[in-house]
Structure formats: structure tokens, C-alpha cells
Amino acid sequence: MLPTQKLKHTLEYIDSCGAMGTVNTNGRLITEQLLDEICHVTKQINFGYNTPNPKTNMVMGKYLPNEKYGDYEQLISTNMDRVLDRGLQCELNILMTSLNAPDMADMAQVINEKGILRVRANEFTPSREAQTNEQLFETSWDEYISGCETLEKNCPGVEVSQKTASYYRNGFPIIGTNGILVITKDGEDIELADMKENINPQEIFEKVNDLGLN
Image (tube, rainbow, N blue to C red):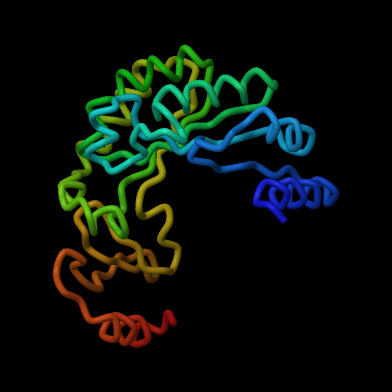
């Protein structure tokens, strides 16, 4: 079974249970054929899209122009239009970093032009991307808030929700903007390790066990 067929069947099952399934996507594989197959069983497609600035996307290691997908920014714009033209809701998930926070005025223009009503600004948690791009570790809380405020100021009527690292913790380890692995217990953040240094996973597991959070 092809991935698109699995997606369709999954959404159909969710719909049969009386719930609404949403689709989270990087936006590259949205086609008219796919929308024909799923638009009757979903009302919302969420795009993970960090900036309309090609130079920033290159630095962040995002999708570069190639023969298969063409220009990344234009492709995402086209596929957003496809979703919105079907009457589906479209939400943007933005990973806010020191690199793309200065681009939020340009992002606001895209949001307003498309008529997008909801944006989720995620605080950068350098668990994967920072392994290849140490610059992302430099993201500060002030830069995160600045990017969010730029969106709020320039997108009247748009719901801009802030999803910080602490939002996701809820009893399991997560990395904050400073690269420190923390876990929350009884409302208190407890440092486990500095992920910018060489770490011993066994030591982390032992700390979590000692806290009674295994």
C-alpha cells in the first residue's frame, strides 16, 4: 500500500469514529490527486514552514531547489493555495530559531496574503537539527519572543500560539533553547545534561530512574 493510500485509510477510519483527523506535512507532497482522496475526511492540513526566505532555508538545511521538487518556497506557496482552494483550514507550524526569527515580517506577509488564521510558533529544541547546525544552539528566549511578537503585530486577527519547550515536557526529558536537557517533576525543571557536550546516555537514564520518573 502506498503512503498516500495509508493516509487516506487512516483518515477514513478516524472519520468513521466520529473524530476529525488533521494532516501535518512539510508541504512538498501535496498534490491535487491527494487532495481528491482526502478532502472529504479532513478539514485541516498543517504545514511545517519556517520562513519564506530562501537564504535562511539554505542555512537551516531545509529543502533546496532540485529537479524533483523545484523551487521550495514556490512549491510550498502553491500547495498552500491548493489546500485553501479546497476550503480546508491551513495552519502553519513555525520552528522559531535565531536564524528565521528576523524573517517573521516576511512570514506575516505570506500569512496575510493566504488568509491563514492560525499559526503555531514552536520554541526550538535542539535535539536533531543542532547536530549538524550548531548555530541553532544560539537561539535565545528573547529571539523566540521577538519572532512571536512580530507575527502578532503584523497579523491582526490571526491566532498565534506559543509552544515553548516547557509545554512539551510533561514528565519526559526535552531540550530547551540553551541546549540543556531537562525534565519536569512536581513543577520544577531538573537539569539532566548539557547536550552540547559529550554525554553518557546511561547516566541520564540513571538520573531519571533516581527521580522516579522512569
